[in-house]
Image (cartoon, rainbow, N blue to C red):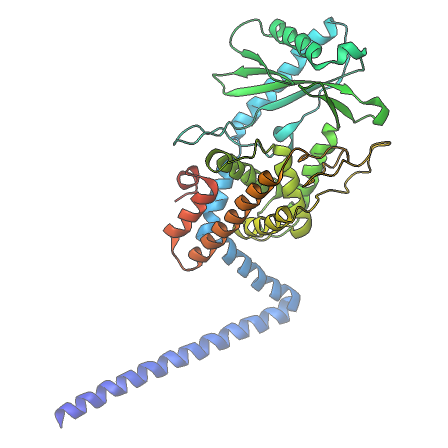
Length: 402
């Protein structure tokens, strides 16, 4: 009998506990509903809805995978002090080389900012942990007034610019060397490198067009300012969207991804120039925009670009009207037309083997990112990190905040 009384008391306590839990839940729900009703009455339904939307956004952006990617993105960009030093040194080079050009009797029309430095898509240098990424060299174009045909040959111009660099910087360091289409000045102690790029004003096409002279003797029509604007407009557009995902930062992530695919997985692709990465990113952004998180943005971009590359879809842009008299590029297996000149197909030399290899990289990138997202949602942070390292290389593990 005594045992039965004890069991009845335990059952009563259990039922009372469950009643209290149920009662508290009802009160909490009623309070939450009341607060939402109060918010909708005092602020209006749209603003009250905005609070819940912002809460959802904050929850999405605060996941571990997103904190890791945001930390890595912040690490990827060159340090502010390094960028400031780059800008100062680039200006010094402009002034010194310009003086040498003038002494030689040539006319420099302009020396515009160019490349990843001007577009804010450059990478920091990284040479530790068994992984090497060169980072960004700063392009310093010197747009010259038209010359006699023989004087516009790249070999002749590089000879002249080599002598300008030698006279402007007679000491060593900096080191001076010659590439196919530029003179490189490298300040090793400061870990800064600059490419002096001679260009010719393409006056038949307007004020802001230039001829870029190639090492094989050919020349390509381009516009430094229009290429810069092409990237900057999309970055500015992404700044107007909710969340912190920015177009130029996504370009940085894709450039870093490119570095490790070329180092680890390359079978046949000769090179993937930065301009191709920028155009693929722009194509994905124009179709998909950016999402609230870097992980979801990149997963959707990889998925979309995999399909575009696999199907050999032509990629072109309508940012600028074609220059007068320029024709469409000749058909090739896959065409990525740069936005300034319709005759310039970035992938004109790609064969099916190169295209399929790139498509495979994009597919694996999508699969690894999606797997990382799914594992993060299941609180499996170690396996999620493993798949992120598969995408971005070993440095991600050391620079993602843990």
